[in-house]
Length: 254
Image 1: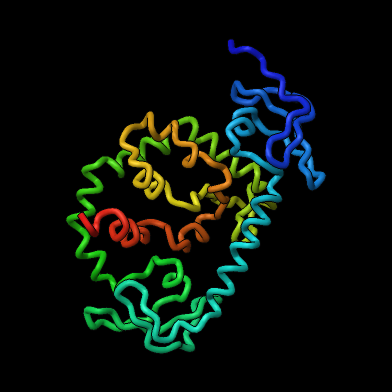
Image 2: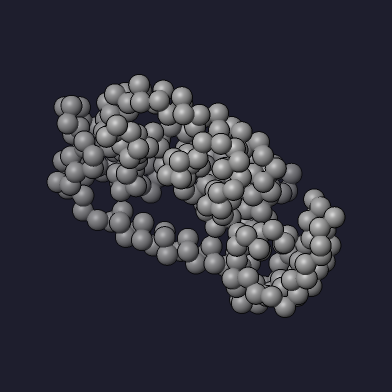
C-alpha cells in the first residue's frame, strides 16, 4: 500500500481541497471547493495530474469563449475564399439546422454545397477527391499501428477513469444539446476528445501503449466533453472526417 498523501488545504487550479471523504476504485476521494463556491468530490489522481482544475466552471467559460469565436466565424463572408481545394463561389439559402451552406467548386471541377463550419474547421478540404487519393497513405498510417493503438488505448483502465471523470464533471449531460437520462429515458453518452486521440498520437509520435499511458495530453480532462451519440456523430471530427486533415498534415509531404 502506498504512503498516504494528505491533500487538505492544497490548491489545484481553482479547487481548494477540504478533506478526504472516502475511496473510489482504490483511489482517495477528496472534497474540494471551487473558486466559484461550488463543492465537488474528485479522486486524487485527477487533481495531482491537473486533469480536474475546477467544478466545471472553467470548462464552461472556455466553451463559451470558443463557441462565441466559432459563432463569429460562421457569420463571416466566405465568398471567394479558398479552403484546401475548395473555392467558395456563392452563399446558399439552404441550411442544415442552424448551419449556413456555401456553394463551392473543387479543383477537380466538382461543385457541391458545404457547411460553413466544416470549411472553417478545416474538415472540408475537397469534394472528396483528396480523401480518395490518400487511401494508400491511410494504409501507411494503419501500418504504423495507429488504428490498433487507438483500440488498445480505449481499453485501458485510465481511459475508463478519464471517461467517468468527464461524465461526472459534466453531470452526465450532453454539452451540446443538454439531454441526459431520466424520467424513464436512457441516453447513450460518449466522452469525446475535443482534440482527437489520433491527432495527439501522431503529433507526439506515440508508437507504444506505454507512451499512450504516459501522455498527459491524452488524459487531460479539459480536452474532453460529454456528448450524446447523435451530437457526437454530428461533430466535425467523428469517424473518418479527420482523415483529410491528418493526411494533409502528417503525410502529404512524405
